Amino acid sequence: MSRLLESNRRSEVEIFATQGCFMKYGSIEYQYAAPIAQALVDDPDFRRWVLSKSVFAEFVDARILNKEIGRHRSNPTAEWWRFHFTEKCRCDGCSGKETDIFTIFESASGVRFALHFEIKQPKDKFKQDGIQSRGYPLRAQCWADKPPAKVLPHQRASTGIFFSEEKREEYEPHLQHFKTLITFEEIEREFPHLAVWHATLNGNAAAK
Ligand SMILES: [Zn+2]
Image 1 (cartoon, helix red, strand yellow):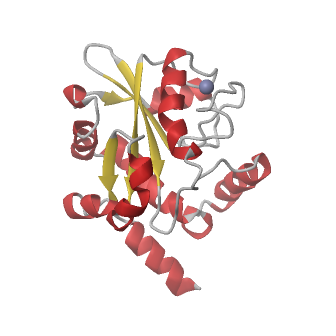
Image 2: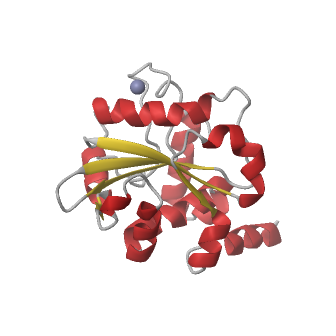
């Protein structure tokens, strides 16, 4: 997803805050992103499984710093994982771009590493210019080198994408920019209790 305009962003947060009902108002992307982000915190098996597929597989038992990320940013309305971007840096990784799920972990030995995840819901597509996907590793490195003020400092960083198996061919030119590739179908198979997006999406369709 490209970054939303600030006004859209605010109204979405306000709607969330007043209605408390992201199912009704959230984007389709959110219906995939929210349970994945939550499971990274709540479900140690899922967290280990995701880390085992990343370049940080040696640190599968790292703890997730969701509370630290939230405190450092001190934005009471935004969930810890979302709306991470900066317009202060004008590099190709940062300008006009946002990480969909931003995570930082800490290994037992004290190494702090970030994973920047893109979420591509099954109906979504990459723009042909390739700027969005190419920006991910650039931004990951940029923030590890000099974190924006609202980003918890960390030493290392990598990238990942959650997407639908059906789109693998279409996304092929972009996937090289993501070191961790995980499909929704894999999650549905391995962690069916986490894959709540089907129920949510079907529920929304029925309500229309
Ligand atoms: Zn930058």
